[in-house]
Amino acid sequence: MKNRKTRALRRSGALCAGLAAVAACGTGGGSVSTSARGPITYVAGADNTGTVRAVLDRWNKLHPREKVTFVQLPTDPDAQRQQMIQNAATRSDAFTVLSLDVVWTSEFAAHRWVDRLSEKHFPLGKMLKPIVATGMYRGGLYSVPASSDGGMLYYRTDLLKQAGIHRPPVTWAELKADCAEVRKLPAAKGVSCYAGQFQKYEGLTVNFAEAVNSAGGVVTDARGRPHLDTPQARKGLEFLVRSFRDGTIPKEAATYQEEDARRAFQSGRLVFERQWPYMYPLANRKDGSSKVAGKFAVAPLPGLNGPGASSLGGHNLALSASARNKATALDFIRFFTSQETQRFSLAYAPAAPTYQALYQDPHLVKKYPYLPVLKQSILHAVPRPRVFGYGDVTAAVQREVFAALTGAKSSAGALKDLQRDLRQQAAGK
Image 1 (cartoon, rainbow, N blue to C red):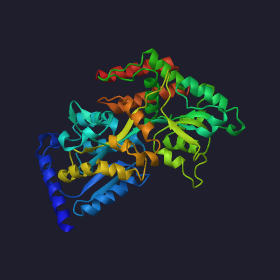
Image 2 (image 1 turned 120 degrees about the vertical axis):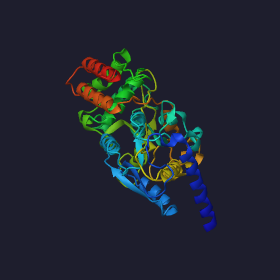
Image 3 (image 1 turned 60 degrees about the vertical axis):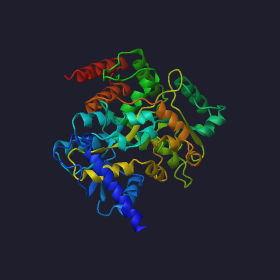
Image 4 (image 1 turned 180 degrees about the horizontal axis):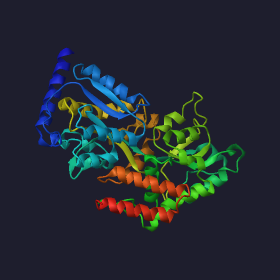
């Protein structure tokens, strides 16, 4: 057993030596060696499910001389990004492997805050193509998919059945009509129709982009140019604004982040909710923490004229350009993003796997019934703006869209101002 482990470690070391020899693996790292080995750090948002710690425990038991320390950042993604940028700006080696939101890759790669990686050393061909694309920048690989994410429509099967409705809504009009029928039921007293994540933070950018995409529009095109002066963009924003006005979306949803919306659905206060897959097992717990356990299912997000399009979520692992012990870091990225680790992680939290095979595994589908819907959500998802200055773009989106949702601006005025701001940003002004 000892000899087998020794051989495995030698193969691992040889692999990393090969990785270090590839020039692409260290384009942003300056004089920092890509062959050094030793302790490293893994930097990510708060580990609310215990998944990260379980994975790191597995690694650390196998690599006692190359242990990984978890640097846990705030839950808020905007705060995570800022701390990573601050570390990069000072060229600190405190952060080694970064867990990047999929929309950050372009910004971090363009600034050379992360190293370019060699594609041939990662099993990208076994992953879903839209997910792989999130790690690319100008033809190069700068981050490796560790998990994906797609929005789904959670709906109360018990209430829809009582109202004589036999399938979830496919369009926004059907969603509102179904709500009207459900809310006639005595069992639906005090229940609101629909909610997503509408507080002024990254979740609002996600929900707004989904509304525009689901109306047939785009926030920005492949070249980063905004397209918010279109009928599709207006219809997408108007769906959200009118839903707040007519009570389809409760007013308090303007304060909702993911956990707020989850608690509202689990407590039985919503018929429908737009949410990520992490909520599925939490809402289905039989320990009394959820009033809707066994009473809900998931479906694709509805759209204007048919099924909608989720924003593509998820996290990729990248190598900090100023890090030390990069050979160990590359090994760790391979370990963390492997199919085996993703299968293991599903036992802790229902993150969306990146490997096609895991969505087709009968055992996993039986255990996690949301997987087929989630796969379709990811395959039809649209990335948020993949632009150089993503932080400025999402801040502008949040500011203008929130103003429209709360009545501080008209939809037309908010979109006009947002189009102007994003055009100026795209032009580098």
